[in-house]
Length: 143
Image 1 (cartoon, rainbow, N blue to C red):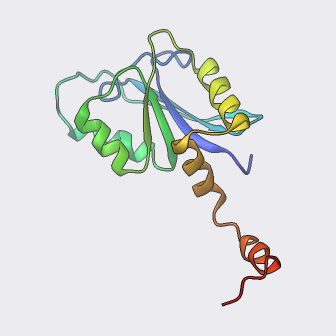
Image 2: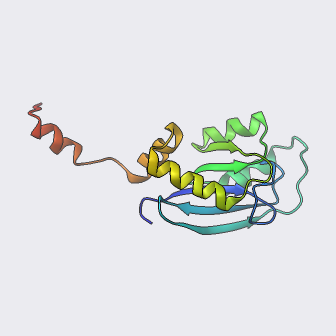
């Protein structure tokens, strides 16, 4: 899965995205490419209150290192700012959303033409296209 991106889901049952980001009991982290998805990690945090205590966010942000997106049922403004500053796209989903359906939607988007955040995540994962200079040379570009 060399073209896969990492995404996380705030979940209490590993089936549904049913948790608020800050008080999420656990996250399921997946590698997803247009054809496959595999779970990389299931992290447990225990009971956490929605109390405005932002110290608990640092552990979650460390877990999300390298993720392109985090799916959650809700997320506070301060947490959004921290998530985005880590280069991760927060995605709020409707109640009852299943991880399986969200992965399928993500894969369909990858196949049909990704949105701006997804295109950026894919390009960051792939790295620079070194052949682009060959194409420019073929077109007659010179320094």
